[in-house]
Length: 437
Image (cartoon, rainbow, N blue to C red; front, side, top):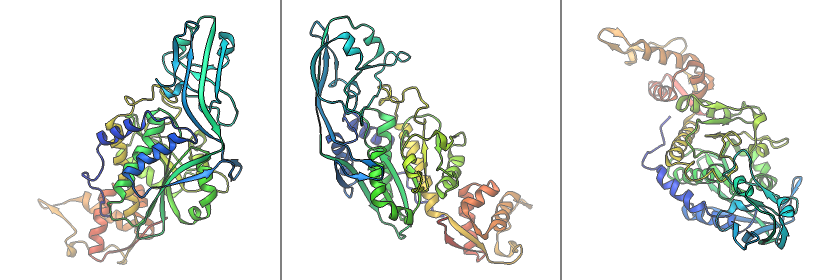
């Protein structure tokens, strides 16, 4: 398996973090101009990205594309006329998909539309009301506790009307029609790990893939979570079921926490097998979660009658870190180092997919390694470790096992088995074909 990676070709953590900084202020939601602006910036890096619009009212499986939401300004003024909450300061201050409002109300009524976290009094929570018409504001609980009785002016200048849902798609052709799918979402406002780390990693991973020699075709989709994925699947499910051999949801992958693994529904797909092997090699302290703890778009890709081979490799898993869905999930929580080490791991995962192959022994019985110069001696003593690796590889090269299977069975590293496979093929002791599991 030739290593396709080039350290120079992979983006630096600083470059990716800078791109996250550019995306961070944009107010994204399920629909609207924030999604379009985000995809437009991604397209500047990936010019072949195709941006598509799906009209409000479009039926996708059991769902319907909602009205489009765009917001311009929103604020709360206290009885003294002081602006105490302002969308311009942080876009998490407004409940996502809030209906327009321009009223003056007393504190008791206002409290029914406020959201805060008593156990995290200094952060702004993330709250939405996508499918029930409502409005609201989010604020630190410590600020909420200071509000005095009186009349408050409340303004949300927004549109909620028929429009469209926007998503992006990039297809990078390979030698084979077999595909690897990467999916990430572009529907959350200013949260760095839960939202932006996914699109940022996906963007620079795709950019790198365009520069390597590849067998697989790679499909990248940038969609609003849940409804966008459902829309995409409703349009392309037959093609995806026929062609996708492995897929991954990219989210929560920019902090420096331990790597996390969310398997597919069965936990036994090709994506699961390769991801576990790469994680065991590069991040042996990774945490594997149960599919019952799912919470992102693997729900859609692994849902009944869809059941694609899709898993997810993350850093700190959604719901499992205290900054999740709050203003504390910011650009200090996501770091250049976190982004780069995740990109490194995904590039190794692609190397493994690209180079994996089923191995067939050619010679009956144990071959004589000495006459081929494969029985090494050091100072008159046999290097048993090297010999054992060769013999272990040959023992499992029965035409049913690929390199990942043999690594799992023997405990030898993929890089060791890759190099030995090339050597044994060159000496006529193995034949091979690419594995698509």
